Amino acid sequence: MHEVVLRIKRSEPSVSAETRFDEFKVPVEEGMVVLDAVHYVEQNIDPTLGVRWNCKAARCGSCAAEINGRPKLMCKTRVESMGDKITIEPMRAFPVVKDLVTDVSHNFEIARKIPPFTPKKDTPTPFLMQQSDILRSKEFRTCIECFLCQDVCHVIREHNSDYVGPKHVVKIASLDMHPLDGIDRSNFMHSDGGLGYCDITKCCQETCPEDIKITDNAIIPEKERIVDHVYDPLGRLIHRIRGSRWQ
Image 1 (tube, rainbow, N blue to C red):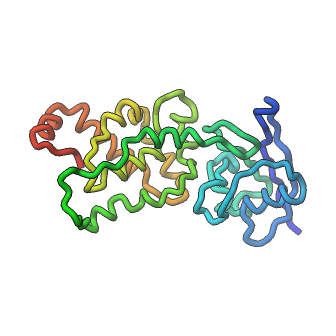
Image 2 (cartoon, helix red, strand yellow):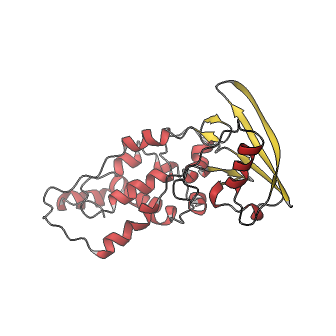
Image 3 (cartoon, rainbow, N blue to C red):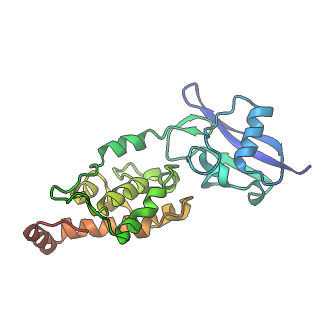
């Protein structure tokens, strides 16, 4: 039977600062994904291996890791596409809890700071949304919160900045594009959100397992909105006179 070698990074910072790579030989079956191989190790070779997973259907985002140096979902990555030796590491942008398990709780702290959806005061009831408004932000609602886009973002990974990250820009863009929302989040994104740190490399967009056009449809429109509200004095004056907000 054909075998594949898994090279898994092991560590448990709460116990020791030591890190190492352990190698395991796993028999390959037809249709096997990397998560299957990791489960084989956990169930048959080393039950102390730490790994987070839930649905095994690419819907929960729990099994995010770095496979051969690229952020991916283990449940969506075919073993046969990775070669005979597969290196698996935890996401580098987040603190490691144990082995492949990382602490992503900082993302929930950021989410609590985002100004929530706030309906306009004079919204008629019932309100009928146009199909174009629904389609405009539909792709943003497919986010499974795997945080792979956060992990691959070099601003978050390499710099100590206040940038909220692409996952949260997607959330903010979905709120800003809602026709009933009455909040102006441009100042938040300019200051607290740190969107100016993003230099549009599109690495987050290329990594997204849901194929959300993060850069094209969320980050760039939000940057344009900041320019319109923060840096364009004529635009600010027009919006103030009209009593309107940027759409």
